[in-house]
Length: 491
Image 1 (cartoon, rainbow, N blue to C red):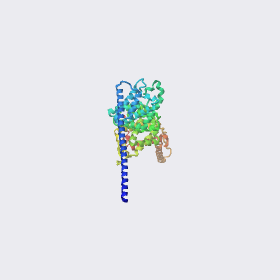
Image 2 (image 1 turned 30 degrees about the vertical axis):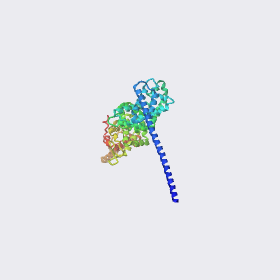
Image 3 (image 1 turned 90 degrees about the vertical axis):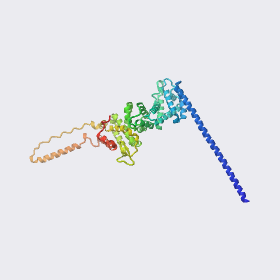
Image 4 (image 1 turned 180 degrees about the horizontal axis):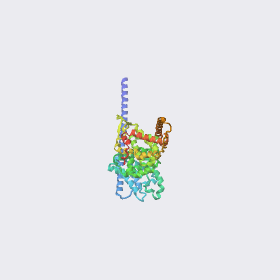
């Protein structure tokens, strides 16, 4: 009887437990079903909202394309906010293109301030929102630039469009709002542009420009037009000038722009105006002085590694060739910078092939990773390097020595006629020959110009010789060109 009562108790407890678990499972299923339904409803609502917004954006641009009426800056601002809210690259690429064209068209309208997109910068309620919107639009433009190929015609048109957007909103010189009475607004608007450029730099602006330049210039024939190359260089230089050539911006410029293969050669050929700008701002002097600090030069080399350090070296040499005055004034620092960069590359130059080496067309077997995408532009880089042992650069580097007039040697007095007996003649002739020999040796050992070994001129000549010796041991595949002085082949 006792065991039967115990069994019924266990059965009761077990049924209660099962009922409790069933109720718990039912609640969890209800909660899961509710959550799934909520997620589906949210997804459907979001899709519906996105369709409505995209439909509204399409209608806005259709009206704009028809030219029936001019859109105000406020209407463009509102439609841009909606587009950026639902923006997806694959779906909204064409819409974003139309938005950029609409914004640029509004900036070209004459004598209608309400139409100018930039006029919203003067609105107290919208200034912050407008600046944020411009930053977002410009960064999306940068993202597109990173993926475009300048050698494709359609992509080239898009490159021009997005570069125009960046050019327009990083400088106030083309804004009609600052003309006439609006000149007083220029300082405030310049600060807005600097703020926008600072935002782009933090996001990786120079990396985008480097990718675009490499895609367009790292080839035997450049695919960037004169206008495109000018725009890219202008965009690259603006933050540096705005920051008054700060170390941080100079570092970014050297790593991302000056390391592009033969960029100075292409600038000199396609856009001489840019070379004038470089000379006006004395960029070479600033580069040389920046790299003259050992820690800065080492940091640049480590960031670039061997292949791109060689490209930077070629561009600096070519720029020095084009600006002889700066080269002459900063020759000591220039020689030191080049020697340090060549010495860095020399660490990884190997004499033999191994599992750890890669072939480089200029350095030979190289133990660092080689960017084979640069091989097509290596002939241009080699031509730039050849300026280092060209007549012009050698004459400039050795200008101090070549300008010194050799001290005239005092004429040796004629030997006196022997007056002694003829028996002493052989002995006298022996001493005479010994004296003449010692005198000639002294003349050979005498420093040219009378300079001591520890003098500045001698030290400078030694440092230059070390530079060329380092070049011989580093640039193994063009060593013969250095020894034979193949600078006459460069035009």
